[in-house]
Image 1 (cartoon, helix red, strand yellow):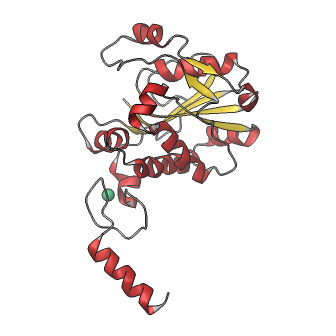
Image 2: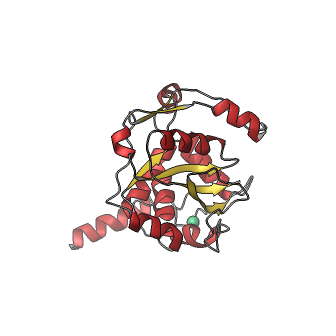
Image 3: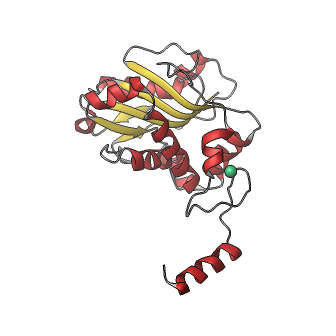
Length: 236
Ligand SMILES: [Zn+2]
C-alpha cells in the first residue's frame, strides 16, 4: 500500500470508524457491519449437535432439514439486528448474517451431504409485491446473497421465479393451525425449470412455527422440487 493510501485509510478510520452495529465496538474489517466476535460467539447456537431438526417442530414430508444458526433472544441483540435489517434498511447486516449462515452450514455433515449429492437452488422466502414496494427490498433475499458468497455456485431464485400471492398480516399470536390456513396457497412457482428436482434451500430470517416456510415448501414440492431444507438465522 502506498504511503498516501495508508494515510488516507487511517484518516477514513478516524472520521468513519468501522463500528459493529451489534456491540458498538470498533473493528478493522472493511465493509462488515457485524464484528467477528458477535458473529462467532455472542449468540446461542441454534443447533449445536447438528440435528436434522433444530427446533421442536415436526417436519412435513419432503422437508429433510430445518436448521437455525442461533436461538432467538426476545428483546436482545439478535432481535435488534434482525429488526435493523428488516425495518431500518441495514441491508449489509443481511449479507453478514447470510454469510455466517453459509459458513455454519459447512460444519453440518447432514446438510453438506445434501449439497454434495444434489444440484441446488437458494429460495429466499418471497415477499408480496405490495410489501416489497413499501420496504424496497426483501430481507430474505439479502440473507440469500450473503449465503451465496459462501456457496458461489448455487443460483438464487429471482423475484419473478416464485411469487407471493397472499399479502398476510403479521401472524403473531395465531395458532399454528390458523397460521397454516392463513398461508394456504400463498405462493406460486412460476419458474418450475429452475427448481425441478433440485435441492431447494429455503432461506428466511426467523423460524417460528414453520407456517410460512412449510407452505412454501409445499408449493415447491408440487412444482417438482427435490428435497427441501429450511435455513434461518434464528428460531423462536
Ligand atoms: Zn460486535
